Image (cartoon, rainbow, N blue to C red):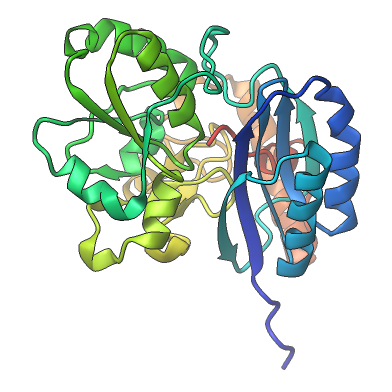
Length: 318
């Protein structure tokens, strides 16, 4: 019987920095990752680098060293985890306007951000009943897991966060604010924005939920549910282990619970209760054909590389 394949190492990384020529980084980063057999997506912009990549442990470490050398950054924030299978199908380095899109050019995390709170100190902070605890992630992420008592801004994208703050929190500027997101990057911009808006005491979870799940024992944890991640693992739990309770809708890329999959509007590989009403019959037909091709490829022991597969290989903002 063949030996099982070694687990794949996954690295979620980001760093805000001043890149004078981000376009010039694209080709070297692409080549460095491909050389080590690493796949995933890196986003580069004038404000820094962000992404999630995966590969064999040794190759990934070499790729991370190369990324540091190419960008000139020796302190890139990295969250590591493992998975039984490669969560990405291709490697792609993309040039972007922002590495995490808030849509406000005045927000600059390199000027001022909130106070970082280490995972081991997070419980004490959010146990204070006077703290305003905010989940900076989107509604579909909050839906499957969060810290008890956290405010859900009900945003469809991170770009909606400024409007939420201005509409709902204008009278809370004197309160202590604690915020969290998946890997920490959104909180850098969100806290910078809130300081800009006049909030005086803003804290955020260093390394995000991923660091908390890796650091804090489950017996001491205040986290409930799964943490949505932007790859085929769908969600992770304590110890950064894939949470098998959740699946991914290949129509809208939202996480699905077992109840979602039993919903009358759910069609495997095509649509779910969250996106079914928005799809035309033409889109449904295309999705059914894509799903059929994927199943045929799996039956042959192959991987289907097509438009649907390419979409699955691209992580969204952390």
